[in-house]
Length: 388
Length: 207
Image 1 (tube, chains in turn red, brown):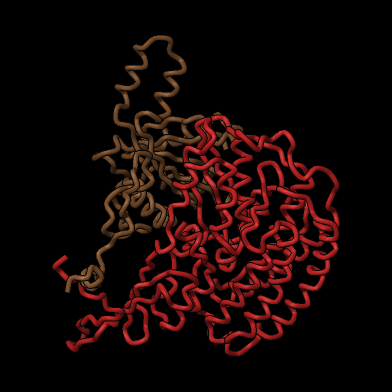
Image 2 (cartoon, helix red, strand yellow):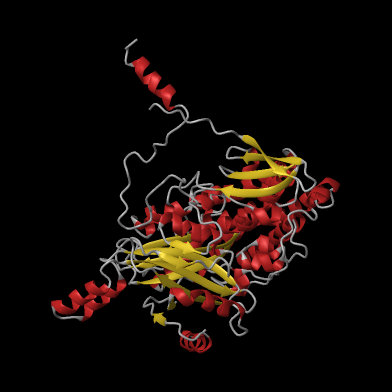
């Protein structure tokens, strides 16, 4: 090769004329992909006028492995462990969303005990996801270590439960079509009850530490404001949407599984800023604790999986189905098309992390570059799911 | 929501549009509406804004590749016929296959859905243009870019139609059924190719 390609500059200056005839220089910064605050390999092309953001374009694809294509060449069950790797913080809710879509496609009934096991594991997942997200957000804000370690201490207790139940802390691969893979081991429920009982104490401690902290308030209130109309139009889901005040939680709207049996409220925000998103997550954790207590109290005996569903040679009849659940990050959907063969003709993941980034630029324009880090942190993304 | 009544409602409000209900035989019974690309924009705005529907939330947008061998029309006709003639006709009707874009619509206000819209391109090679629905629902923004990137449907009217997951210089469409993975797709020219070449030369022992 004879031609040499110049090294890409990490920052460059472009001149723009000012209205009074002078000249201002825009600083173009490539933020990421190895930036510590980008939560994985994610890059933003940012143009700055002084400290102010005037352009921000997210760049994806560093973790792209074409999950959907791989799943088309795999059996239905063979994709189940791979769904763990989408949003690697919430493998159990990923499993559930995929199982739900396949159950819709093939018309499988799930036994009652399995539904309860799914609710318990999914709500534990929501607890640990929200706790660590708040920790990460504080880390991004400069509160080095302490809040994140508090959150990780609690998360680790929940991951211990996952490990005891599924054999893995994070890559759980627990759900099956028509139920779950294994039943609860002896003593698991008692241990889980202890963890859940102790959780509100951690939330109190967390709130005492953070909620009325002056720095937190100054840096998050009024930052990254998202309007109701834009949030709905841009398809934002999860805590991001509810922080703007839109009451849309699939646990209430679709009532998938057995969520109509539990009493819980949907916390809503008023301003749609970063502080509201933080508060919504704390309140959602409290509601999840309530759901968990009810589910563990009512857990019935019975089979934990549907015995009629075939494990081997599973071939749904031709057709298609879209199944969606309220994952901790938003609406996680799976769209499947079957042509009657053992592997799906089309397999599509609707990633909440990716679609919640649609309005990242709108939220950051006009803010300081330091706020970009916080706004991105409050969106709650995992690149395994964004890039697939 | 009744798809039949929705269809006649759209037909009275948007004259000249051609709609077709695509049945879904699976237990999910999520039937969909095939929309002609010329009127897709008007239909979307009608669905989003008209009072009984208010489908303000476009949840999922995705593409599907139907090469001639797999297109559902052909499969159906093959099941029905008992001679070779109809089969040949079906092949003529869609000799090139087509690409399809699917939109799953819900209403956050009325809490109903899904209404599933489909649009089809004329073939898979050159006439692959469809109107972008991003001006109606912004949530289609990244998802239509992804379809463009992985399936090669060109969305006219999209504000920023670029590759999103693959790199800019990439040429093929990886989610197509007939895509063949190149054996050197990891190769990208870098600023250090010259250094690497010198290194190889050094290792080869030639001074």
